Length: 118
Image (cartoon, rainbow, N blue to C red; front, side):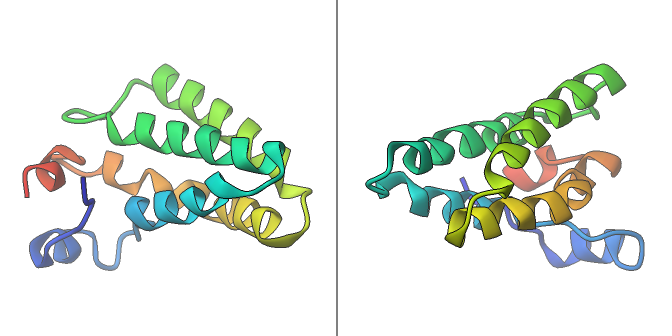
C-alpha cells in the first residue's frame, strides 16, 4: 500500500503541519532486514511493525490512550536503536526527530482512510 497525499490533502494541511511519509520510513527500515547482525536485522521487524500498526488506525482519530500506547511502544523501539552507530543509529535518531510528524494525518478530518482509498 502506498501512502501518498494528493494536492487537496496537501492544501488542507499546508501551513498547519507537515506529514512524514510513512512509505519512505518503512522502505528505509526494510533496508536493515538483510543485515548480517541479527540485532540490526531484527530492528527492521520492530520498527516496521509499529509503523504498520499506525497505518492501520483509520477513520476517526485514536483515543488518547491508544495514541499514548502506540507512541510509548514506538519510542521504546527508537530509543533502543538510537545509540547504535552507522545507518541504523542515524535512522533511529531521525525517527526521534520525526516522531511528532509521523502522526499528523491523525489530526485531520478523514485521517488516513482518505489516503488509503486512493
